[in-house]
Length: 83
Image 1 (cartoon, one colour):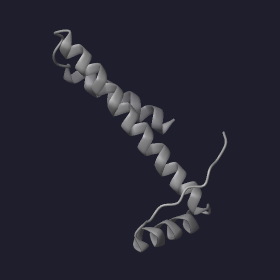
Image 2 (cartoon, helix red, strand yellow):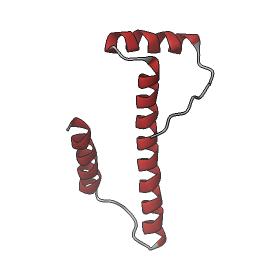
Image 3 (cartoon, rainbow, N blue to C red):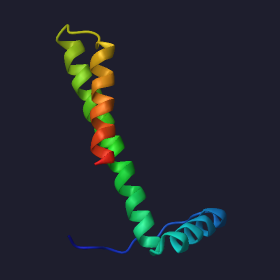
């Protein structure tokens, strides 16, 4: 995958925290920022997909989700993160 450079402003305390964390994890700041962006995108795309599905279900008259289904989905996501 090709990479591009991007610039943005960040509070100095956040930059210092990134630098401290990158040193402790023995990686560079860019790696940490990329990992954070990956996690952010994954979470928000997952939420968007779920909302879209639920809206389609609601529009089709299929309202509500069983709690067992919600927890099963959460367990599945957690397991995939741990593996």
